[in-house]
Image 1: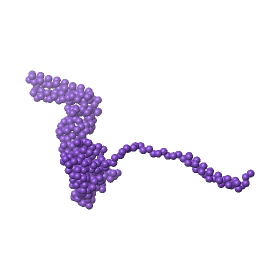
Image 2: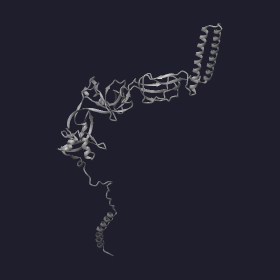
Image 3: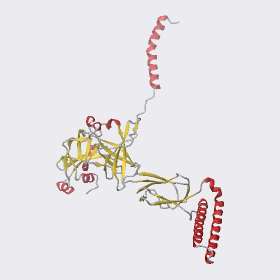
Image 4: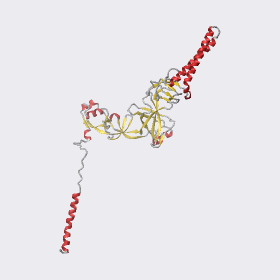
Length: 408
């Protein structure tokens, strides 16, 4: 047996070895993380700033007709660009309905978008009898036929008596009138019976005329249809003047002058026109969006705008203290901002906005800019250029083509 002192020494010597072994095992059991792999690699990357400088010769500058203006800080009116909706002027849009039940005749050429004039006949309506009389159509036709035969017999008898000098001219004329009335009654009875069977020939017909000159907005029936009373046939609208409904933020209502006009622009980039404020019968409001509807009227003799069309509206705002609340046109509020001519702004294929700035003689640098809004023929720039820089106006598109190989 070993003495206790020997055993204690042996245990003390084995402790460091056990700890080292445990640390080694822990290190072997720990998995190494794989190196992250980039999903894409760009070889020989080139900075955007190294692609934006164009150096040309004096002859090329003259040939391209390059002109520059200094970027300046102007006081720009406070405006809002909001969306609007074109609407027909109330009272200038009508819905034509069938006055009675019957069968429509004509109207084959009436289509949406067609112009019509006031008094133009759109349809002819052959009336049908009341529903309770539909079952007696055959009986009514037979009765009218019998009445005509009796009237014709009386006429023949009156003519014979007049020929034998036993009758009077008045009796013959009365008999002729009875025959005419009986013939008309039989024709009407046959027309009503024929209309029920889909044949609208003959008989009386009510003309359906346009109450105003305008454009057909919607057609809801087809020729030859059997319609009931008050069935919508056609919707018309006079478009020489239209309204624009603009949902304006309620906080801007106090800054909108009472007689302040707006600029209405189609979304496809067409010509803009001025809109005059009008007193709408109701001022609608939407609590969820915090907006209230205001209305403006624009001249539309060329029918460039149609009801339901969405447009862009530029609203000029004044100071709240001198706005529409005092009954006068509010003084237009203005703020300093960097502006450049609209001709200086360029767009690339992805919609990026650029300008060329002259940095040295015969050297032009293309800079990316951020456009805030357009004010007339000026563009308000929020960042990208500094005041005093010479921006290219005439010849900017030619420089763009020169840089990318589109011009030689």
